[in-house]
Image (cartoon, rainbow, N blue to C red):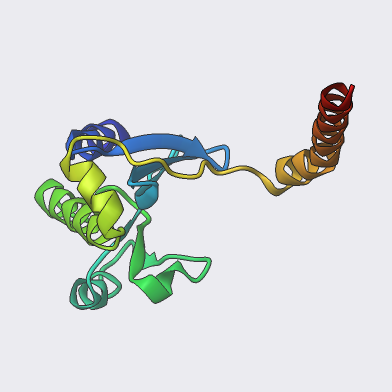
Length: 156
């Protein structure tokens, strides 16, 4: 498979979304949770699998357990997009999608069944979160001043 055919297949799955994250990775998500990661400009693809399939996959050439403790959750990394046949790749990507969708909350699953994208928190880098925290007290002070002014006007 190619990057384009993987993207085309993943986006054909119901309510799947894509997002570029970590500068060079295209993430495919369902309900805000990743089910596949494609390296842009490279030939790698990571996806979740069942425990049985995980055991089979890590024995194959060009397929390794994923890094960053994702292997604990049966994620594998296909170091080459030719490590599996196209049919096997599609089947494994569909399985990953199904596993992640099944792990969503019942509320999120109901939203997806109704054809609506559930509201999910967007990934924000730590530096941006810290910057927002520093600005937050200023907003609170403005609101507090506005409340004091409104209270004075009511008294007068």
